[in-house]
Image (cartoon, rainbow over the protein chains, first blue to last red):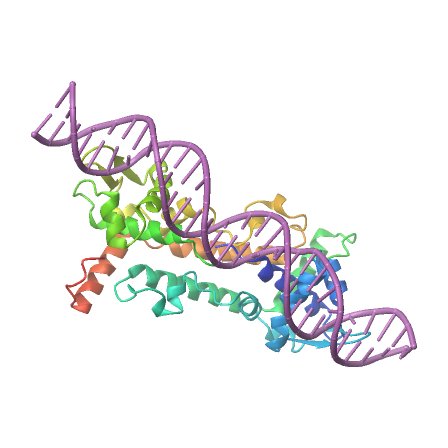
Length: 149
Length: 149
DNA sequence: ATAATTCCTATTATTATAGTAGTATTTATT
DNA sequence: AATAAATACTACTATAATAATAGGAATTAT
């Protein structure tokens, strides 16, 4: 039940973009540096978020990444589902043909419920929530030595 | 976020044992046949459930596997946690030392909540529940050609 | 024209999962 | 005591997914 690093990296990168919302494009290099993620890998991770329309990219000099919509409008479900694919804990939940016992299998119902509660939880959290929470943490710790989020 | 086959196999095998509860030992071969799982692999999958005390095994001729306690007392959490290890979606949730940003990371809180709701759900379901549900399904389908659960 | 950036494709290393195999040990039955 | 049937244990292997790395093409501001 581990989440891939893709999902984690994408989430952290999107939080950076949420912080930068309304301030123009932010370079991949900068995101990668602040979050300590390989540039080249992050590039691949973010790609599907662009094709799905959550981020806008500007090519060329002074280009970069920015959110295509307000942080309030992007949930963790949007992000994770995009980079990770389905959140079904087992394949048969999405695709009944994956197993020939679906009609009689009680565990499938369980996995299905599990998927739903995870989705529900992830949908309940948007990027703006995380920005607020982040600000709170920063104040609470009283630290100013952390340039990283 | 995929569950391993270990977790699925263990769950299905435990349901077989729940059906067989009070009827003496059930052979691995029989469980494997009914659930269409490799015998040798299932053997390894069930091993930790024995060391944790959920199942009792009798060696030798006429030996086999049986639940060590009533089906009501064994939850899906018990089973899955035993064979799969922690249900934390990312390592830092269990082990703060896994990452040096735990103090400032808001996503960690999210993953932590995610872990908790999954655990809560899995703890809410025990083997007796699944046996009942299975019986219901069997009746509903009106099928008697399925010797398999 | 140049430098800075994203875009795209291919390759590789590492790890975890899933499974196979063989032998040792135990025990009921005869 | 011998035998057959079962679990216990250990080692190995194949496959697939993940997590990168690498390099050049395309685009754009200056």
